[in-house]
Image (cartoon, rainbow, N blue to C red; front, side):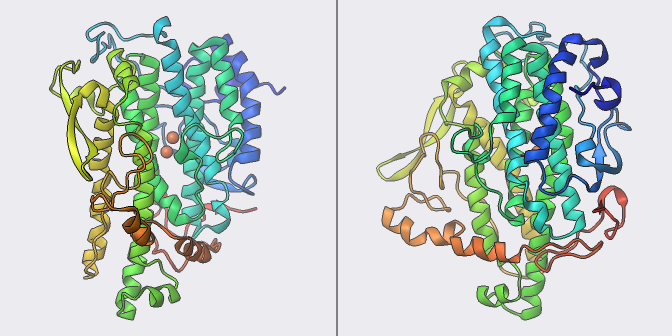
Length: 475
Ligand SMILES: [Fe+2]
Ligand SMILES: [Fe+2]
């Protein structure tokens, strides 16, 4: 077994070189992690020098150091945001008490479950994206993919740190299991369904990083409120990295749209056949991808009524998005919230106790946030003078969890018959033909400064480097 020089190899602010228990746990786990990266990390990329951002400390100078690195040599670190002196629990039944520096026995199982569920999504997304490098539209994009991948790897480290440090033997077993599950594997799949779906092409990747990484943001924001202080501090630091992932998604989709509307104006057509013949992705297909990724992602927030959600909140494990900025009592007993159900063939609002509806509260906050980028995409279309508007579908569309699970609802929010659904679904969700067409565009473009035909170049490079910078050296 290799010996690890902790302060050299693993940048951290958790006093790792003095913590024997943590060292012993990592001695075992770290080589298995590297093996997992070899097996399941970006395909064929182990030897590339990639212009990556590495966090070496949590201060503004240290969390974004840029340089060419081979990904297996990336310095995956363990960082917590600095502690807040005398931090108090600020919601739920323990409101006003001191935040926990250790795991209270009665919340151990729930906290472990929350950490494992979050941790499982991190390697899952790396697995989902592992073949994308083979069809990258440019070096710039390839570098962004790899940046997202190494940071998801670091997010796994962040959750494993908590398991190793605070959960003893159970935690070590869970940390191993995080390296054993595989996205999409029939026998040992990842925990959440959206993380077992394929990310087969770059349009899917950009949609995933826009919509599904944003789910990550909201989950992390809710955990950043936690009474378990190490979890709050770990997730706060993870959020600094998450912003880049959503930028990759938003700007990626925006550049696809830019290229499409340019072609529409050049060819003076909105004919899908002609646009596809010209090798760009038509706007209706982009809309169907939005419908798919949005609906699959909002399922991740869980059932609209959940006693677990109530327990997690009242016991102080998981807060609401921006809990501290809200002006209510932060206990929520006796308060109600509106959820949707179907009655007499129509969607209808129903008031339920808010504590049980906290998944829905988080989902609604997410929906508001995710509309912002779609508005910005529409500005690209508007600026080109094209009368077409992208939208996110109604939240009851294509749902697989909670009260709305399996109910047939159109993207504009009408309950429809099975017949209408079957007639229309090809206009609402990506068809096999759409996916095959998008797949047919995926060729590898790696010459510096060159971009695939279906996507416009970015406005600026990474870390103020030129767009034709050598972001990846292939050796
Ligand atoms: Fe992540
Ligand atoms: Fe992410």
